[in-house]
Amino acid sequence: MLGACDPAAALTLLQGEDALNEYCFNTHRISHLFCQTCGIESFGRGVGPDGSEMAAINVRRLDGVDLFALKPHPFDGGSL
Ligand SMILES: [Zn+2]
Image (cartoon, rainbow, N blue to C red; front, side, top):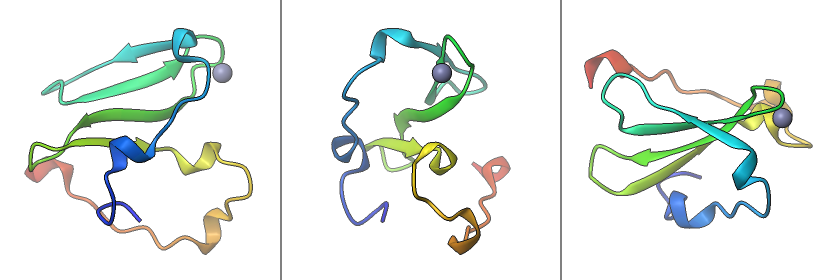
């Protein structure tokens, strides 16, 4: 669960860093990382509102995740 640990430290990319392209928009606080081959964004890195490093994973890219079992929480990014 994010927030219960250090999300940036909890993410270890085992391979493929050189196959990623970075895209930043708006405030450039988040590094959106896309596969150069298929264009999928599997994760991003950035700095949270409290200044700590963070990572966000696209769970649609993880094996064995039942998306319908997840309970997403709405997030108002426009209020940042
Ligand atoms: Zn790919």
